[in-house]
Length: 366
Image (cartoon, rainbow, N blue to C red; front, side, top):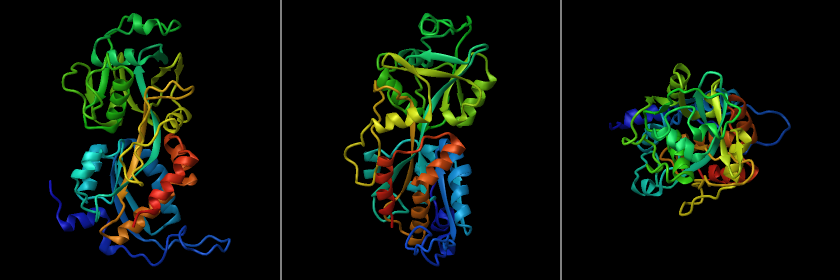
């Protein structure tokens, strides 16, 4: 689907209607000890990862618009793949994505809202991916990577299978069929989940790290989006699925074997695996893609983690859109922005070290 220039302008936020009468409150304003009214106005739109939706709607957008009453931020949780595509076509000013663009995707481009192919990618939303299940009388389970992989490939089919029972001596496991639930849509959550399986259980999971569920793995159920997976698990019998931990609700959850211990998901454990992992090589200075170490045995890390990125242009075609995106991203990576997301979505605030890099990336936007 192609977008006309008129459609692009409207979707990106009506740049022609955007009026900037001065600087953002946190840029260039004199320190008088009193709060200064924001001079930003206008509308920008973003789209992408559904995992970010609670943080975007109830956290970042609410907080930013409270401080900037004449600004409207729209975010469509259409999924990571759709968000990246919309951003490339210039239909939105920024994207949310549960994975960074691959280097060959950046090289191929184009990015219609940008003047160059240099993009800013900031790991602003860190959250564990919970393995959730619905088995009567069981609310916690311990599983290792190989067992998880065999459940989702259909090799392990019963809840009382010896591989599950041996790790859960205190659980009463029924002789009941396992019904795995996976995403039907292209999803960064699936990408992160399968990336973990491919790294930590390569003999049991041979389908690789993929955002679309492998066609060769049949059986189970498919559901649209994070909410669809959660509802399918909740409404089923003997079901198991994977979803952003903020949506786990009251379902049973899995602790994952790391080294010799089983680690439950927590925001702190998710942040710990990010801090233990390096940046990817071959990226520009402001493309902060994390090379997650899914096989880490460091104490207290939870390896099935989703790092969701803010994606924007380093150089925008429209300076007005650049100013709003820059101001919005700056709020998101701030201590305040990270705390409101943590309260709204249960995400893990980024570390001070990562924040320093993120602030530098945001500062490059123009």
